[in-house]
Length: 88
View 1 (tube, helix red, strand yellow):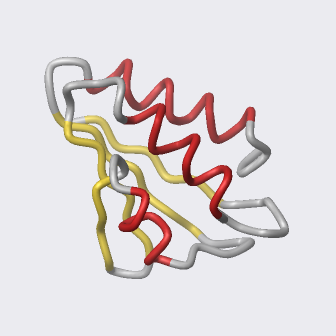
View 2 (cartoon, rainbow, N blue to C red):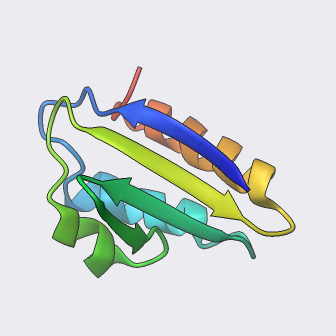
């Protein structure tokens, strides 16, 4: 299992557009990818799950990946978060 913590620096947090892009990035992999925030965890491949968390600016989130391509999945999600301006 791979696990990383991120601080969301975007003023708008994880809103619809970047959430959609994150879901698309995570969905390319066979591994289970989970987004955790304030004690709740959702499947990062589910747009409804991600949006339900209401992740705002300065939020601390944890993303975990578990499966055959877990490292590659987490690397891709981290790169996508940075590219979308969600984190530094």
